[in-house]
Structure formats: structure tokens, C-alpha cells
Image (tube, rainbow, N blue to C red; front, side):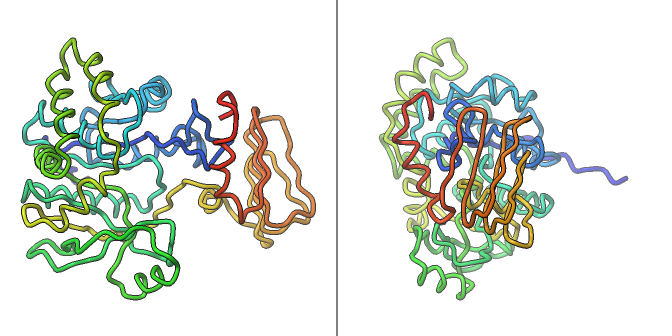
Length: 368
């Protein structure tokens, strides 16, 4: 068998696992969010995200950033995750601060660190192609520490629920990567159709590769207030004051996404370059019942079921049962989503399933 090349020692990965998954209630709950719930067989989205790194990034260079309250659940799902590679947020402050804190920790430990930012929301196949694209992203950042790398999913339909990346000019010697012309927020349907038909746009995947110090330089330029706070935390990291300073400073950091804070302004700034690696993979962002349905097999009438569930005489109905020893039956239903767990049951028209998030906001805290 051929030898597997050893990944460069300055390559790391951070999985962002902080999403609350409210649109997948009641399967996803405050104490057991969607990334910890078994989705594919017995594997959770977080475990799938970690498995995609096998052969690409060693266990000792994989980090996870999520709410501190989920530490035990995440450590249980990923037994090889060490305390040194766990980044527990005292409260969520959006993605730029999660990425910046990771960059600060890595830059302190390894000045040459380059890291991939990945998420625990996706099902991505084939894994081999995914790894090739991430490796290409690493090589782009290694060639230019000021380069910020993003990944664009080749669109398969005119999605209005995703942001888009517009492809710019070529990067000599780096095909298929191209320059990023601009980031576009979630479009309406006519614009989404125009983007897909043009072939010049990809879905914004929310995945990146950064040189750790290069990212901090961009943060200082575009978000100096965030940078100042992150530097205070960096100084205390890996010291006895780490927890105290993190708890005091992190909640004060301005809340903003990495796209708004860094990627969009950097794509228009001559001091930085933003590269986009197209990813022609099957990419499912499992954030709602409509996308979860795509993970289940479909019968001739468009019904999907998992667990001990029986849709009879139904059409376009999904029945999800998460309670062993309990049977859920549906008769003559059309266009419904029916979800049963040991704690709660949800019934909603499939066309209104995105409104589950509104429902969760109305629930008493003990039911969220």
C-alpha cells in the first residue's frame, strides 16, 4: 500500500459547533443541540465533521469551539478531543469572535499556524473531494499568509436560503481557485436563478482557511475593537488567568459574523487577497426539517420516515420518531412534518416548517 503523506505540522482545523438548531426542535434542544444528535445512523453531525478530517488533520491538531455548557456532550462525542483543544465560549458572540479566538490561541502556540474553519452543520460527500479542496485551501494560505480562503459550493438549484460568492479572475498556478469578486447576501428567487445560470457564483459554504496571524492582522484592520479584546484573551491563554479573562472579556466583544466583519471588506481591500476554491460536492446544510428530510429515503408517494413510524395513505409527509418502543402512525396526511421525541411532539405543515424557530422563542425555557 502507498504511504499516506504526513500533513505539514503547522496545519490545524477548528470545528465550529455552536449552532443551537432551533428549527429542528424538538429533536434539537438547548442542552442537546442538533450537532450532537445522531443524524446518519448513530453518528451526529459533529462526529461526521470530525471523521471528514481523518488523514487530513491529526487528532492532536483538531480544535472545537462551542458553548462551554456543551463541553461534556462534545467531549463524549469526540473522546480524542483534549482540554487544550477545547474552546468553550462563555456566551455566543457570532462567528468572527470564534474564529478570532482560535487564531489567537494558535498564533500564540505556533506562529506559523494555518487552520481550516469547518462547521458541524453539514453532510458533505464525497469526503475525498472535500479533502482535496481543503488541502488546496491550505496551500493557498501557505503561499501567501495575507490570503483569506473561502470555499464555494457548486449550486444545484437557485437557493434563496444561502449567501453566494461571485468568482473573480484566476490566480496564476492555483487553478481551480479564483479570486473572490464579492460576497452576496441571500438573494430573492429571480436573482438566485440569474446567479446559478451565469455559472459565476457558488453558495457560500461558511468554511475557510486562514493563516492565524494573517487573520489577526485582518481583524485589527477591519474590527479593531474585536482585535483589542481578543489580544487580552490571548495574553491570558494557557495561564492560570485564562478562564477569568475569557469570562470577563469575551461577552463584551462586538457580535458580528466573519463574513460581514472580515471577508466582505477584505475582498475589496488591496492589502488582502480573498481566494475562492470551488467545491463540486454534495453539500447539505442540515438546519431545518426541510433539509433534514433530504437525509431520509422517500417512498413513491413522497413520504419519509425514520424510527418506529408508519405513514399510511399519506403523501409528502415526514414522520420522525426518536422514542424507542413507541410507534407513531399517520393516516391520510398530506404535506405534514410529524416529529416525536420522549419529551415533545411537533406537527406542522411542511410549507411552514421554517416557523418552528418562532415557536421555540415562545416556549418556556424548560421546553426549549
